Each structure stands twice: as structure tokens, then as C-alpha cells.
Amino acid sequence: MSQYQNQRPRNGRYGRPQFSSNRSSNRRQPKKAYIHPSRFIQSAKPVSASDFTPTNKFIDLELHPLIKGNLIKMGYSEPSPIQDQAIPLGLEGKDIVGIADTGTGKTAAFAVPLLNRLIMERNTQAIILAPTRELAQQIEEQCRHIAKGSGLDGALLIGGMAMGPQLRELRFNPRIIIGTPGRIKDHLERRSLILDQCNIVVLDEVDRMLDMGFVNDIREILSKTNQRKQSFYFSATLDNRVKAIIDTFSVNPIQISVKTGETSSNVEQNIVPFKSVSEKIGKLHDLLIQDAFAKTLVFDDTHHSVENLSKELSIRGFSTDSIHGGKSQSQRQQVLKRFKENHIKVLVATDVAARGLDVSDITHVINYSSPQTYEDYVHRIGRTGRAGKVGYALTFVESNS
Ligand code: AMP
Image (cartoon, rainbow, N blue to C red; front, side, top):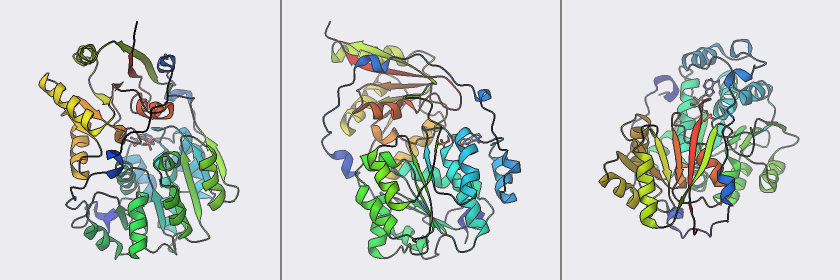
């Protein structure tokens, strides 16, 4: 049975989740880096989509007609800047390093050439690694839309889900494997996954995967793939750790960059000073009752603090829920769905939600606790101000004066 053809996952495709918690997020948080509050204040300088004229049109690219048709159905009328550069090079079989902010359309930038190759060339198999389960799921969803009707078969291998359905999927020799490094390594160790023939590799959000400690897993997984392969690396930053991975597995990849600056230019950023805990919650309350805060993502540090804050806001009458690594995968999915579909207005989250989540219309991001690093800050606030809209980010800062 073909997953991409039917759009209906196999039995157990998103099978009953195990109620295991994400161990890493139970760990004590590392000490936070000091970030000067002035870095949380910045006026938005929105870049209008009309400022960009793509060199290519999807219709003119050498793409399988099925993919062209699906892109139109998805409402993709023309390529985004990263897609404009990456897709033609990807179709030529080049290795690509894409430096791109979140929300720039980077998923389709690698998924379109990759899926085109899978459809056109029989002896191809692809693997896509992503840092979080949510991001892996979103990538898989987009791939299914782009390749709908192609008959391609895929497997989603993420932690927090039962092994059984994944083992069943792997027995069909799927042409596209999408997942998180930990679970993919588990499958390699069990020999339920063999990657000798895998000749297209994508590492999405490489910097984030390295931050999460996946460096050895990534190296091991890549070393098991075919020697002759096309590779795509996408990362918000290109530091020495990221370069080291790329240098090991690629020769002279082409680097493209569409970074708009150190932080999202579409986000109006400011601070909220507070002196005491009671004043802090009061200030949050006063913000959230405003009509403008139509869909707000609030960040806090730990499972516990997120749960408590979410309960407190609920008691205060806000429609709210929480997402963190202590929730099962299916619970997280349900909460996200309710947030996407506007059944809840306030989502309280740990950094689990900070990367790659594609909820297009978040009006405000509130850092109720300050982020671990400025890098994390950039990713948190990148959840708003998407698709050419202006977003707002507010960071609570303790003031002694
Ligand atoms: P990404 O950065 O891949 O997470 O994409 C961000 C959002 O932009 C997603 O909702 C995509 O569906 C959407 N998107 C990506 N490429 C295009 C395009 N060429 N035209 C319109 N929307 C797009």
C-alpha cells in the first residue's frame, strides 16, 4: 500500500503512543547565558514578499508534472527566496548547504528536488533527519502533499511512538525515511533499517541537532548511507561544529543563504520589566486579556513551570494548554492541533516548541522566562511574524530599580 498515494497512513501509522517522557527535558537545565535586555528590544522592519522577484517559476522548472500540480494545489504560486536558489541546484544533483531562518520555506527547498529524484529515478532512497518529533512530522506531512499520487512509500521514525508500526512500515522498504536521530539509530542497531542504498540525505536544522547532543548519532547514521550520495544541509547558523559535519560527508557543497539578519526582521520586540513574581503574573494577565493577543505562545523553563503557568492561566479564565517533553507524543499532537485550529488562544511551552513549528498565524511570543541563549531567543521569536506578517515578541526581564 502506498502512503503517498492514499494519504491514509497504514494501520498504526501514528499508532498508539507509549506514554514515555522525553528524558532529556527532565534533566536539570544548564545555566543560562546572560543576555543584555537591550537585545530583546527591536523595531520590526517587515520585508514584504513583493520585494522579492524569483528567478524561477515552478511551472518552468524541470519538475515532474505531478509535483507541479501538487504545488499549485498547495497554493505555492512562486518559489520563496531559498527555494528559488535551492531547487534548481538540487535538481542538478548538487550538494547544498542552506543557511536559512525558520519559516522561509526551507522544507520545500529540499523536499521538491528530493521527491522529484525519487519519482524519476528508481534506484534512489532518501533519509531526512530532524531535531524534534514535531518537525519530523511536519516535514513528512509536506512531503506527502508534494508527492501526493506518486505511489512513493515512506516511513516516519520518531521517538515516543511504539516500535511495532514503524517496524511494519520498514518491511515495505520505504523510499523515504523521515525521523529523529535517536530513533533512527535504534532501528539501525536492530538492523530493521539498512541504509546501504540510501543516496539522498537531508539534515534539517543541523545546528539544533548538534545543540541537542546528536553529533555521534548523526555521524553514525551518515556513515551507514551510500558513499555516493546527494546531501542537503539546512541550518540557521554555520558554526565550526556544523562545518565539521559537512566537511566529513560532502566535497565542495554549494552554499546558499537567505538569512535576513541576526533576528527575525518581521518581529517587533520589547521587554516587560517586573519586580516580583506576583507582579509578573499580573502583567502577563494584563497582556493576554488584550484583543490583539489573539494567538499567543508563552515560553517558560521546565515541564513543571509550564504546567503550573498553564493551570494558573486557566484558573484566570484564559483558554490555554501546555506543550513540553513530559507529554506523550499524541498529547503534544493534540494540543498543537487545538492551537492551530484556534480552540485555544494561549499555548504555554518549553523550548520543545521553539524550533520548526509551523503555526502560521501566531500573533505574539512571550518569553515569560528568559531563553538559555540568544540563539534560542531567535528561534523562539521566529514562531511569530511568519508569512510576511508582523509579529510581536515580549520578554520578561527582572528589574531591581
Ligand atoms: P517552512 O520554512 O518550510 O517551515 O515553511 C513555512 C511555511 O511557508 C509553511 O506553511 C509552508 O507551507 C509555506 N510555504 C513554503 N513555501 C511556499 C511557497 N513557495 N508559497 C507559499 N507558501 C509556502
